[in-house]
Amino acid sequence: MKPFNISPRRGPLAAATTAVVLAVVLATSVSAKPKEKVYAASCDRVWAAVKTATAPPHYNFATYNDQEKKAMVSTGNTWSGKRYLDISLHGQGDSCTVAVGGQFSGITHNDKGDLFQRIQDALDAQTKPAPEEKKKSD
Image 1: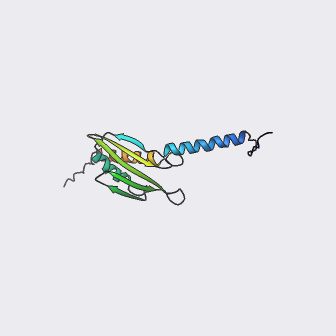
Image 2: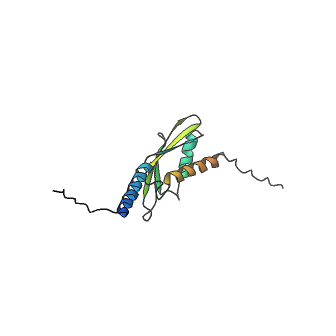
Image 3: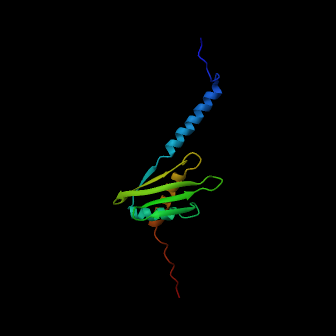
């Protein structure tokens, strides 16, 4: 007597669909892990850059813990989906590691990568010399 098979025979389309679903699930779980980036600056300078980088319009709100150098920011909207990123800094001297955690980054949105770039842009703006004031001759 043959055992009863409750699943119908599957074709190549079902196998391809299963592979795509598994790839998306694996990619989501990988991207949900915190990403880290090391900046060649003190954590005090990087923390100031984080505060600049997380200001509107790119982020809806941010909460900061200055003593622990940790933050939580919100981005997205009703249409793109609200997403939350948690940020923490640690380091010594002129080396600071920024860890950014959150979900969905890299699948449809690159929230972590965008934040790292905004932090770098804010650091670069800190190091640019102030424009010289033009002297008026009377």
